[in-house]
Length: 209
Ligand code: C5P
Image 1 (cartoon, rainbow, N blue to C red):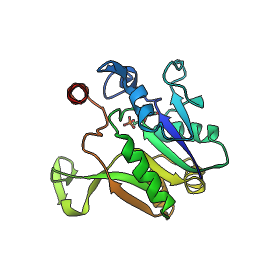
Image 2 (cartoon, helix red, strand yellow):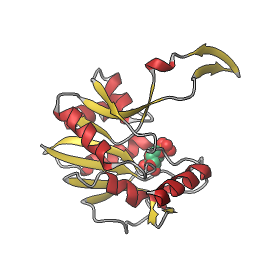
Image 3 (cartoon, protein in one colour):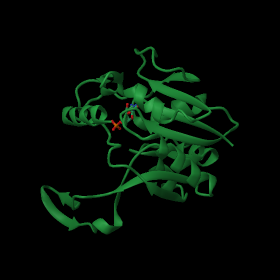
């Protein structure tokens, strides 16, 4: 079964102040490292901001992303061929994803799941808050933080995106459509680079490797 990957790199970095995916991290751009993490795919599509031209590693196609992450994924879906049976979506901002995460999520879909995500246990206690007041403390034992790369049966992902919904990850769309999402072992190192301090930590980790 052919596996294609979409790397979404069209964010504007609003929380960070600049598109962090194009910054260098220990000598290689964040987005190039994210492409490396899905290099085992049969084809890779990168969704970019419209003003950016691609000068990273060779990929099958680049597309112009959209105003939201989900729109950028949809732009990528259009460039993936119909004979790709499994589609993997990866955030450009996750530069430190070990390639074994790609293998794990794809293996879970090959084994029968509609989709698979890497999950990591939470070390913090998570509380629901309304107006600055805690309304609920969630049971940490039931929770994981969901990462990318995420893999899906291609028809399931395409169907979940057909009504043009929005969500912070693709698994949420497949769950809402009634699909089964398996959780495979994620990696705490695979953080989404969101703040200046994340970049500093990621740079230090890469230098240790
Ligand atoms: O900002 P957020 O955490 O949702 O970004 C996750 C990933 O989605 C990033 O790699 C970012 O570049 C990408 N993204 C995108 N198009 C958008 C917004 C985010 O490709 N419109």
